[in-house]
Length: 382
Ligand SMILES: [Zn+2]
Image 1 (tube, protein in one colour):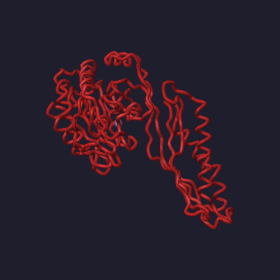
Image 2: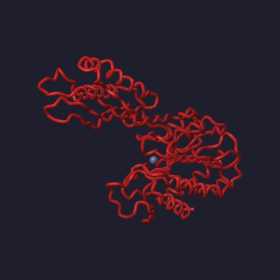
Image 3: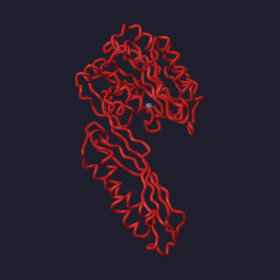
């Protein structure tokens, strides 16, 4: 079992599917593997046609099956020092090293390694693999597939997203909304600030407003178990102006918010936009109506909230041999499946601390644990 999973992982790692690259040859390989076991496949291509989500279904065409989901893209290795080729899996003692070993081709390999056993199990309900793209650039690829599954007759009972959780049951994480704000001012000689609009000064007012929101968030609402247990917002990148004595024409900054389940990122965003448009812009427009403040959302990742189904939670904890669920500080595609109406959770092999690192690696035992878990899970529910 371990050897097979490692062989499959080696094939998957061999496709250098960093988010900027196509994932189609990896999907071709997966299709070839799964159709040997009678699986049905459906692709959800992107607009350019160079990437796709892949939905694989085995077992009867019935509602109430389960979804096992993971992303096919990996983060780049630029600027990292690796001790070997990142896209050639190698073994060192009991660990397998390669880009994506943990995040998260390891889980994909477990799904494929478990498939022969799963398909021979006499399934009463289907098992679906939902393999996505562009997760690492803000979970922007999986949406159409998750929505299609959620609104189709498949009506799965739940989805397991196999992000590295050291095989713990993760039931909640924050949502994220990130993007740019651009202030367009009016340039001129800095001896006459009132005749012009200083984009750096306006941007600094907006950043200061975001800081007051941040401080207010520390007073709650709270979601216990998350660290910190309240929402956060900040600006970590800013650029503006051209010279020390020219009133700045433009200033651009990147904002990010991490919002607890139950709180609305859009409501926070609306508060910021209202301040920009109702408080800051009128003064700018009095000098020049061509000035203004523009916002651009780069990514929106919904939060994951614990599912209402406490029986399901208890039963899956029992299958895992764990006593409690965890809450984590990172985002995932799980909230997108949940938003599509599918109860969702994160359970996957590997330690999140290994993700995105040089010489990223996963323990072979974690892989075999995961394959066994997937076999038990599908035997129980399908
Ligand atoms: Zn991941």
